[in-house]
Image (tube, rainbow, N blue to C red; front, side, top):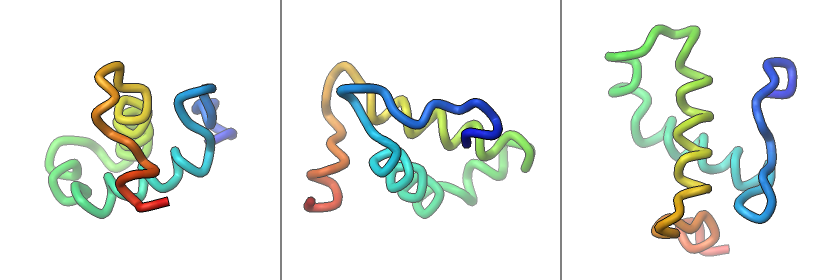
Length: 70
């Protein structure tokens, strides 16, 4: 992610560990669907952006700590 200039942390919303597990959650849950609409080269950026969306959501509905019971 650093090589491509993607954000790893945004205080107080998330750190790199929260970002990593949220990206993995999205890939696990939705990779087949995402591949229908996005070129392989764009998939990583899209998953990163979706994870950031979840982690910075102003409604505060998603909590990575609650989701993974940590």
